[in-house]
Structures are given as C-alpha cells and as structure tokens.
Length: 235
Image (cartoon, rainbow, N blue to C red):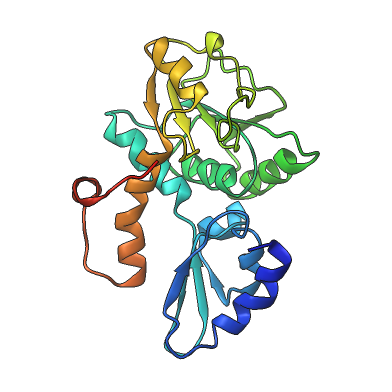
C-alpha cells in the first residue's frame, strides 16, 4: 500500500469493531505515528512505530520493537551493548529504533550516517535530549574501530546493491547487524562472515521481537527459540 493510501485507510480500519491491532511494516512505520493516542518512549525517540493496539476506550497505543529485537539478538550471541562503540548506517525508522535501544542499553558511543540530508542529525538531536551523556558522531560509514556495525538500510535487498560499508574495514572482533530479511544472507553479511565476524541477521532480529509482540498484544508468551522451532521461512 502506498504511503498516501495508507494515511487515508488506516484511521478508517481502526474504527472497525473487530480491530485489535496491527503490525506495521515499511514504508508505513513513520506515517502511523501521527495516528497514535499514546506512544512509547521508543516510538517518540525513533519517530517510528511497528506495533499498534487499540485500548478498550478506542485509543491507539503504539510501540517500536525493532531496536529491542536487535539488542536481544546481540545478547543471544553472548555479548552486551553496554560500553560498546556502535556504528549505524541508516537513520530511518529501523535505524532510529536500533539507535534508541543501543542508547538505552548503555552504548558508550553511537555513530550515525544516512544519505538523506539531515536525517542523522535529527536523530542525533533526539538522542542528545534523552541521553545527554552519550557520545555521538555523524557522517562516516567507516566501521573500523567500532565494536558493533549495523546496516539499517535496504541495501542488500536486490542483487547488485552496493554494500552499506566496507567489510574489509571491520575488526575481526566486531559484531555486525543486518536489518534486511530477504535475502537472509545479504552480500554484506556474507562478506562479514568471510572475515570471521559475528553477525545478527535480520531474521535474528525478527525472532527476538516476536515474544515482545505477543506480550504487547496480550497473547500467551513464547520464547524466541520456540518461535524459531515452529516457524517456516520461505525464500
């Protein structure tokens, strides 16, 4: 659905008596924020939302779990974001959510870059307001000397896409994050793995988000491992 059509249709859908909520995908994660009656801290900081539920009085409540999924994925590798230097390429909805979650988790430094003029600066300003002690830098996609490097752009979705950063500049001890779901193994991930770099894939992020989704919507709980065991991934 095109963004302009979504803006017209979504508020109408929310009036349905059987509407409980929705998961929001790109490119609508930013547009839906305007319709929320209540937004989580993650939504306010990221400027994007990927889960909406309707309260008993009809209020739309929104939250953002992309960043939490990434941080949980990092934890599953046995690492911790706290004290780490993090590079995030892409300052859109998902990149903003990852930045917000990394700041909340205690990252020592976050570097932001985006091809759209002003996007990284606007995100940095929101981070400064909420995390005044956080070290921030802008402009470079050079991953050297960073502990964590994240591709938060669509690059890698299509054959021939340029790489979001130079994998030869990754430290062997670094950890790479990828948000692209299909293909599961992007060119960037393949290059990082060839260097022996640990990776959190887009699917890893997705599976780590699902338990949080279930809790948000009031459904019975499940662990990420249980979800993986029952999931069927189609290419």
